[in-house]
Amino acid sequence: SYLPRSHRTYSCVHCRAHLACHEELISKSFQGSHGRAYLFNSVVNVGCGPAEQRLLLTGLHSVADIFCQSCKTTLGWKYEQAFESSQKYKEGKFIIETSHMVKENGWD
Image (cartoon, rainbow, N blue to C red):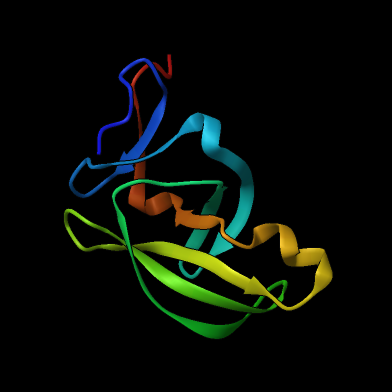
């Protein structure tokens, strides 16, 4: 899938496949497995692995790793279920680590 050229987008740093529009960004203050990460409402061109329970910084969650459909690089994860009520807003959302994405289209 290609996102509209008129939108600021985030793409895979490895193969340049589109991943998300800037409008889908929820927060830049997340921590991934290997560094800083962004939380997105929706993404494109990603595959999803099986869900598993992980104890993250904010408690126990059911998450599924996501990967670039084009180059198969693991990018982050999708929150399937949050077990604490204060974390429910993350369900169905996506984490992409900043080291795996690049900004494209009109960021000047």
